[in-house]
Amino acid sequence: MNRLLLFSSLFVFLFSSAAGQEAPIPQPQLEESVSALDLYQQGGAFMHILLICSMGTIAVAGYCFIHISRKKLVPKDFANGIQQVMAQRDVTRAYDACQGHESSLAKVIGGALLKVNFERDLANKASMMDAAAEALDEEEHRQMVWVNYLNIFATLAPMIGLLGTVWGMIEAFDKLATTSGDPKQLAGGIKVAMVTTAGGLIVGIPAMFFYFFFRDKLSGVMTQVQKEASFAIDLLSGEIRLQGAEAARSAEREPEPGQQA
Image (tube, rainbow, N blue to C red; front, side, top):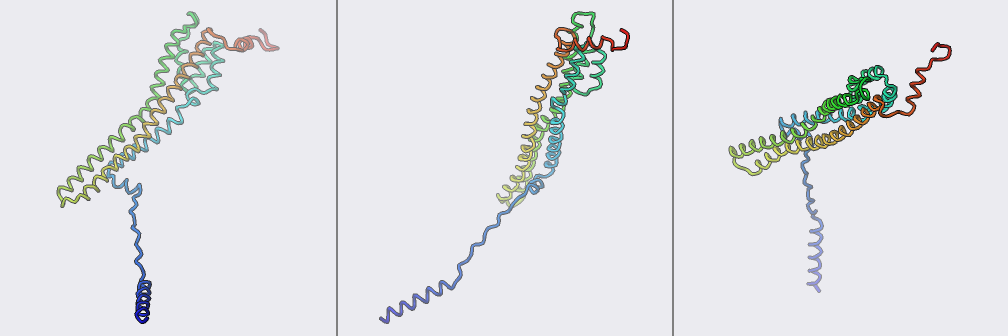
């Protein structure tokens, strides 16, 4: 009985001693967070060039978004108005309207009107179509210059990023050769070097997307310009008739009440 009481007292003493000691609380490990600005600074001078390429991509894409559209290059109001004038075969009025408009359709039709000759078959339609085709090619080339800038940025940015990576790896191996040869230093140098490759791809991929997008969009718009110009030339040549055009011409020829014919 005494032994049982002794063991019980010893157990209670040990349990209370263990409970009185606080267990160590594990300290959370703080992870080092790296921001985009930190990565930009780690990339070195090549990141400044990539920043310029990104700003150029944004500017050119914004320009193409505004100007390469049917509303700008083939305005509906101008197309309808020039059709009415061409159907009336009023060359002077049609040419003045084209000269006062900045759209691609106006430039194409204006070039075709320089070849008008009513003494020849269909008002010299063949020559007008050739002149319109030349003006269309020139206008498409003028608009395509801006789209090609996107292709330049899409090609140049990854190449600059790759150059920055190679340059950074050369510096990392050079430091490894002149120091104690710690692999951690090499890994850190390669990490910094790869930042420029990532930056080049971040700039190049959107630039390539916008290049193909606006190239196809411009091709579709130029096709619409060709259709509208061809239709206007057919109206002027008399090969097709526009509903209401003959009535408008007759109304212009008839004298108003109170005027002599």
